[in-house]
Length: 261
Image 1 (cartoon, helix red, strand yellow):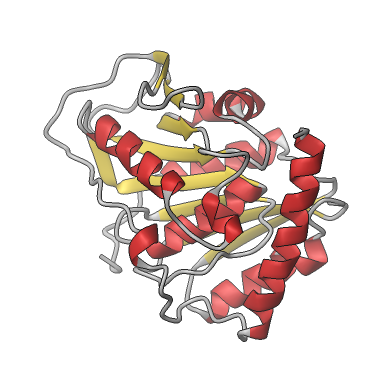
Image 2 (tube, rainbow, N blue to C red):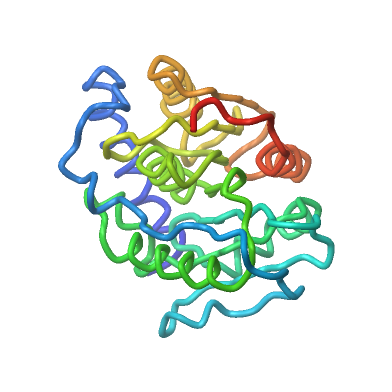
């Protein structure tokens, strides 16, 4: 199946999901049966050593696996960690290459998994293999080196952005921030915590049009009590490098003691 066909199918499913999302009054905090299947169990540790620089395979999947990317320059002590999710029909290597410059400047460890299928499971109305795989990846990484629990971020582009919003909402006791580049909708799931959210979207996006996606998602999240930063830009279905840098810098920045925790 071509990447274009996958992207078109994903866009169709986005609009279906967005219709349900909107019809429900854009309530992103209500109870859902999918809650337990969208929960992650891995938790960071601060009593381990530092990470060695470089990009290596996660080494936990056959065929489709993912990457662990550790920049040469990291802050002393426990480090920020970013989970980065690719779009429909994409791959870890593809999204890592697209955002490499911004990621290098962030001063954070990046966990970049491959979806188990052509795209993430929530778009098909359920959580399962992808949540399990991401949990395994995090368990492995959290056991390798010290991670700052106040700076664990989930991010993504397109379908990966929608999935990041879903996982961030359902795992707000793990993820403190969510970065969503051009999301389509917010998949179902019960909210736990209130992570901060940063969303970017192009005003000429022909795959996931701004008017039917982020311009509905942002006010719905705000009504539900999420702190949201929204950056609209001139362009299509992409991630401008300057906005990617800004978003990751925002995500990994140290904050005063978090009153939400």
